[in-house]
Length: 303
Image (cartoon, rainbow, N blue to C red; front, side, top):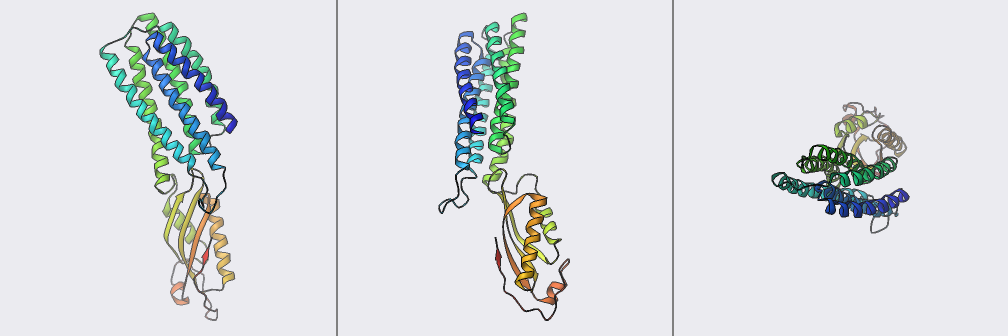
């Protein structure tokens, strides 16, 4: 993963210098916006690289969960930066629509062709390691670059054959809209993780129902599910069970954790048991019958 990011950083920086230089020479806003877009990609890849390093560091007494959210924070910053750049491109493009500027279309197409090849290769490399939101944000950057640079080639061809200069700012608006929309989805997902919201695609009602179907569970309350990172979910809750020996409660805990792993990929759990008297628990749906002769046990904690 780190090797892919290093290669991406080097190639992206070289392409930024090329597009900025040629964009200024050719008076192409589309190429200049590509340089800005790729500059944000460079920052995104750099942040992702740092986040990957941090995520590999072990937990400590000061950081008990480790640095699992480093990648999430990097993705949030990357996407927010991209949204700001997209708005800036849109403003400049609207000005160019009002006051067109001549564009050197041949030079514009040549540089864009180099960009399509480079960004396409980098997008394929990142697609293979885009399991978490951090790497997915980097992949989306490169995929967006590939598509937008391909659009620049088409725009350059239209300008070359028809002389319609408004195509350049119109393409810039299209690129800006695409970048803004893809970044917005990343911002929503990462913000939900940072605010410890319920993980995307996971229903709290389904989690509670699955836990309550475990034999011996009377009810589940104070249920919380959140994400430590983009692929690591955690759960804490209180579970009421019959007043049974610790060996029996251990079996219930093991089955609950297995159901959570199999159905929801929740690997980190903190479950507190609360014991009910036999008559109270027998009335609860799905609860194991309790023998009157079983000794009472106190509520316990399991991690």
